[in-house]
Image (cartoon, rainbow, N blue to C red; front, side):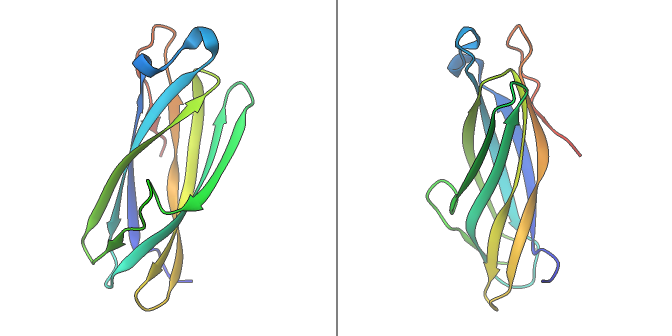
Amino acid sequence: MSQSPMSVKVEPQYLAEQSSPEDHVYTFAYTITVTNIGAVSAQLIARHWRINDTSGHAQEVKGLGVIGQQPLLAPGESFRYTSGCRLQAASGTMHGSFFVVDELGERFDVPVPLFLLEADADGAPRARVLH
């Protein structure tokens, strides 16, 4: 398997207005930008997420595409989307990968860096990417 032809940028955000701390529901959005840094077109086929919170709850999410799409990106093109998740605690982490196939048939797993999902007791957003 060759070097990944994609770069990934993550922007997490706590959604206080969609959360209910008294019910142990903490809602987060994350915006992902995937950019084709390779020399040929490539298509994002599937996603795989691991989501953990400090209550000990773990989720694994696998599926085709993202937000119902399997974007085909020419060299230099980007695809940006926003999705979300709910935690049972005010703090957690998320990371994963995208499965990509380029027009030459090369297959790649593109890692998505670990990012922190955290809300202060007063509801202030503190979600951030961990490098």
